[in-house]
Length: 167
Length: 180
View 1: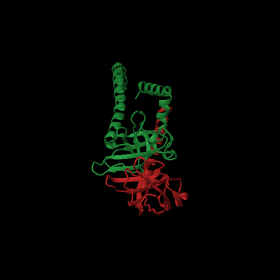
View 2: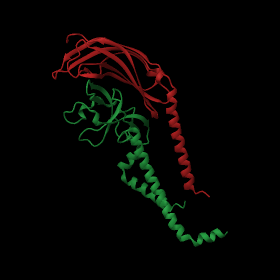
View 3: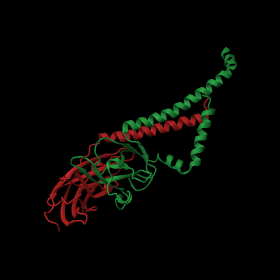
View 4: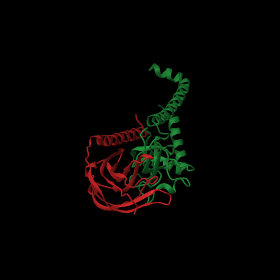
C-alpha cells in the first residue's frame, strides 16, 4: 500500500500547507482591523539651534508626547515601531522628513505613552533654511506582524515655527 | 490477467519510459521553481523578491533567519520604511529602516539615511567612505511582508555546505529510485 516515507511525505506536506494557510489567514484578518490612533506632541523648549560648520542648520529640542496606540494591536501584531518625524518643505527640497524620536512598543500594555523626551536625532537640514520655518510634527507607526503583511500609517499631530535667530 | 504478461514483455521499454518520465518530472520541478522566482521578480519589481535576515540589527522586529518579502514600486521612499540596500564595495545587502528623507524640488532625486532599530547610531559608518546619503539606485526594495524562521534553512545550508550536499544527494536518490 503506502510506504512509511509516503505517509511521512503526505503528513509533512499537509502540515506545511495548513501552517501556510493559517499564516495567510492571520495576515488577511488584519485588513478588517480598524484602528484609531490619537496623540499630541508639543515642543517645550528649543535647546540648541545653530549652524553646523558645514553650513547645515541643526536643532535639538525637548518634546512633550502623549500617544495612544492601543487600538493598533491585534493577535497578529509582534510589535509597533512608532516615531515622530519633523516634516517641512524648503526651496531646495520638496520633502524633508527627519525622525526626531522613535520607540518600539512590544505589547498593548505599553502602547499608551505619556512622556517628555529630548530629540533622539537632531533635526538637521540640507542647508540653512530652518530659521522661521514651519515644521509639521507627524506621528508614524509601523506594525510588524507575527507573519504576513506589514502595516504602516501616519497622523499629523501639530505644527510649530522655529525661531528667526540662532541660539 | 493478460496485461501482466504484456507488462512483463514490454518491461525494457517501460524502464526507458520511466527514466524519461522521471527526467521530465525532475525538469518540471526545477523549471517551476525558476518560473516562480522570475514571476515574483516581475510582480514585485525587485531584483531579489525575498531576502533572509542575516544580522540582529533590526531586533526585536526581525531576527536572524526571518524572511522578508520585498516590493519595489514607483512610490518614493519615505521615512519609516524598511529598505534593502546595497552599499558600493559591499557584497551583502543590508535591511534597515529609513530615518531621514530629503527629496529635491525639481528632479525628485532622494537622499536617504538609514538605521537599524537595534543599532545605537545611524548607518553612515556602514556606507562607503565619505558617503553621507543613500540614493535611489542603492535601494533594492522595501520590505512589505514577513515570515519568521523559514530563512534558517538557507542560513544552515550556506554555513554548513555538507548538509546542502547531503540533502541534494538524498533528494536525487529519492527521485531516481521512486517507482511512481
